[in-house]
Image (cartoon, rainbow, N blue to C red; front, side, top):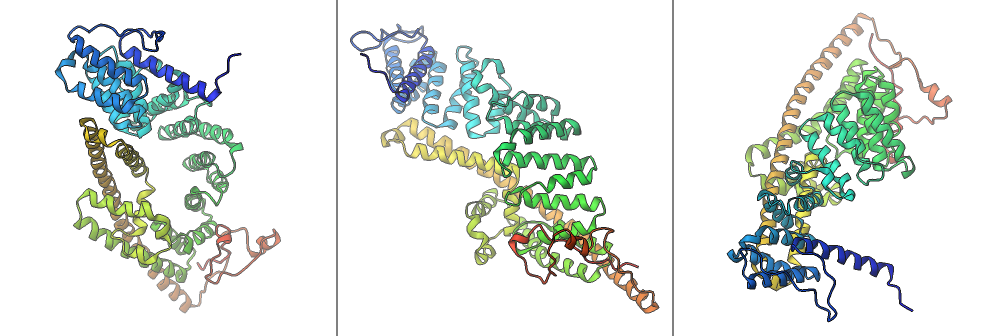
Length: 539
């Protein structure tokens, strides 16, 4: 009785067979069964423009590739790309060399081989090279390569298992170009069965928001939230959908609906802090001052002292101005000055004296790599050249995260190269791979440094604007205190009504809330549950 191959072994055999098929197609011959004595069927004769010796040498390299000896094959193939004896088959050799690098997890190095084939417009390997280039670019998260490939791709030429990735990447490309209609259509074409579906559905909603089609945006976010409802309340995609829905309602001026959705964001997610701040704006637009102050009480607790939130402190001061609570307003403006005056000074000093983008990257990466340790180390935070608040806000920016992901992918590829055998690393192919990846890392670090510098310059400008608002608020506070003193002297006095018309202290007690007067202590389990029940002091 014949023994059955184990499933895993059979899968590996099939994988090897299909890879052999691809190499065989690139070699320009039909796949043939092995001969009885164990060797492959005779190789083709020399191609036009190649000698018999050159053809034999190329066939030997192809056999190494089919045997899975990628390092040895790449060694030979790379040398052939520099040898005029193989000029007639250079693009075929480059394509196969790209496959070798791709199989060795060297995506950036492989991509350069495929780009050469595409640029030379060799129709024999154009489609295959574009497919592999797209996959390598997707793995690297490299926008430049993705954009290059997308401009030349027909989705239908791709294997079905890769078409979803391609549609998603095309949608991203169209979004960067501001072509929101086409982007929304591309994202909508990614099916539910695809791992790209949650990201695509969120980006579809965002594309509709950008074109101010709020109904379709809401439909996309609602669909995503429903799709992820069984994944748990803290599921990142579900939370992103809820945030998207809340923002759509805010943009539609439906403040109460926006607030209700913001309240659905769980506390133990990264989005909760943002939801608290954004809902504060919804409350202030609805003139619900008590709710604004309740949210800001949580935002300004010591648990969030590392967040860059100058706008929220000024917002709190303005609310106190509205309700004529000048003493509280003075404390709030004092908090703003105490936190952000040193930040502004250090931002000015760094951006005015440092222009090298590498230094910007180096300083920010200190925080990116050691964030958890720095949070609890005040001395280390104070020793940073860039304020910790600024660094933390920068590493949350989308363009920073996108490029930083690419840099780390390149570093992983650099590790793969460094782990190769010594004979390979010392050969021309190894020197080429090391130099190429190092060059991409160095260039990307400079690009990232300029991204960081741009964010810091924008923060510096925003802080300058906010200090103007701070001075204006301070003037209004002093003027209000003066007018209040005049009224007091004239005997007119003040009203002592609630900040808004509903939900007094008795309301909360009657509805199951515990009442504890705030004495300046914060408890983590109470964050988000503060309720301002003070009075307004206006006449």
